[in-house]
Amino acid sequence: MDRQKQRMTLTAAAMLVPLMAACGSEKADSGSGSVGAERPVTGVRWSVDSVTADGKTHQAPAGAHVTIDKGRAEGSFGCNNFSAEATVDGDRVRLGKTMATEMACENKPMAFEKTLARALSDQELEARVKSDRLTLTTDQGDTVHLTKAGDAPLAGTRWTVTTPEADGRAHLTFDEKKGTVSGSLGCNKVNAEATVRDGHITLGPPATTRMMCEDSLMTAEKTLLRLFDGKPKYRVDHQTLTLTSENGTTVRAVAER
Image (cartoon, rainbow, N blue to C red):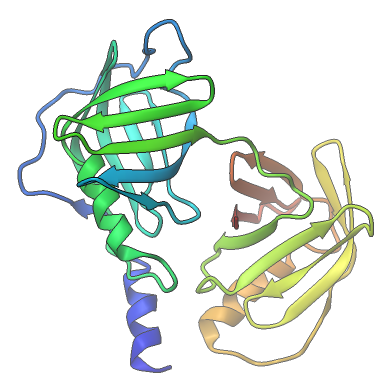
């Protein structure tokens, strides 16, 4: 494994760390609240569309999102995950004690991530909701533009496995018309029959290639194989897919846009 891959593997396990030295002191409330007579801000997964800062609009990468609920704000800047204490009072959203991971992601605009992190970290924001769109504006005039996120469809979506960790190489795609699932287990390619019904997916025996990879990928692969030739439960929550096998194995994946 080269040094770059080692660095990526190590940073992927980074713990949440403070984003700013001067953290807010707000206490978390129940998180309930709405803006005007429109839709509530809380309890909704908002996908970040763009950020306007210093007179320039920057488009968000796939995966950037935020959810405010039960006194917490959680989400992703596009690469790194974050969380913060949050209170909602009328059209004001106050964020404090923001924490974030410190991963270095490939193919992600890290400059955008810094811009979004600055806008959402440890300050008060003015919230405006119109239909399925939300804007969060800082006192300095920077604005985050967001759209209510719906559930990704199970079929036709490329689901990148996050648990077990496979360095982003494991992914699955379900084809409803063909009644199949195909993708990668992290090392080897896989395909199998797949029938979706009543919250379960009946998976047939897996057909795989037979390559040998580093131990971490092979361990993840063994876990994923436990899903096959069985009837795991499935649940889609916004952009996250959870598969739970009959033997208790849990696999989580996120939708790629």
